[in-house]
Image 1 (cartoon, rainbow, N blue to C red):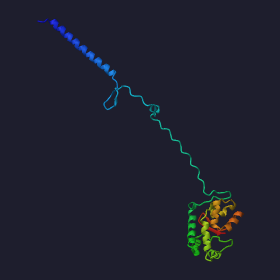
Image 2 (cartoon, helix red, strand yellow; image 1 turned 180 degrees about the horizontal axis):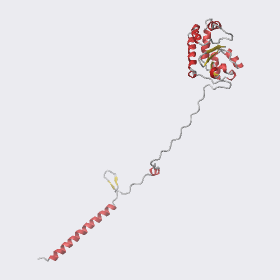
Image 3 (cartoon, rainbow, N blue to C red; image 1 turned 30 degrees about the vertical axis):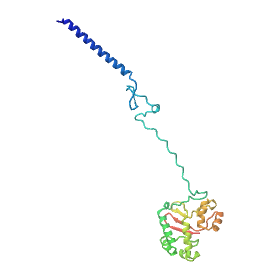
Image 4 (tube, helix red, strand yellow; image 1 turned 90 degrees about the vertical axis):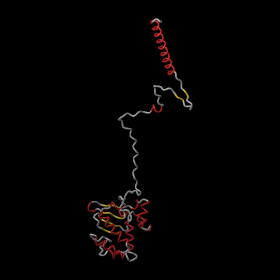
Length: 245
């Protein structure tokens, strides 16, 4: 029979041997993980051992400033200021402020102007009679008093029917106009040449003048500086005051 002490010694030796084997295997495994090289897979892709430290950001991204929370972005530069509008027909010295937009006229003036134009476009001088009768007073058509403007215009026209006067009236009203005086005496006058020094006309304004008058009449007026053809005056309250030349 074996002695009990002998069995105890065998058990202790076996336990020590197993412990040494475990320690050796654990130590060898840690060393292999620490020096694990890059391995190329069968597909050609390179597999790196994972590292606890993240890769450094590219220089371009690293240099990019990080916006601070709660701060507003820098405002865009303001657009350049628009250039001031320039008039197609600059007003020379000695000229009133020339207007072309009929919507700037007071409503009573617009109403009278429309009535005059409609009657003149008809080609029948008698169509002007209701316009005259609707007026507060008969407009002046000559330096002396005239009882019947219609009969006067017929006599003044080369055709004897008043159509020459109607044509001249339409030409005059198609030009620019000016506003003269203030308050109760406020008046709108066509064409603006009636209130203009003709020696100061621009080339484009000279063309406007030639649309109303033939050059044979317009040139002498430009030299003298005075307009002496048909002109129309309508007060701000819509009363037609004159058609004179």
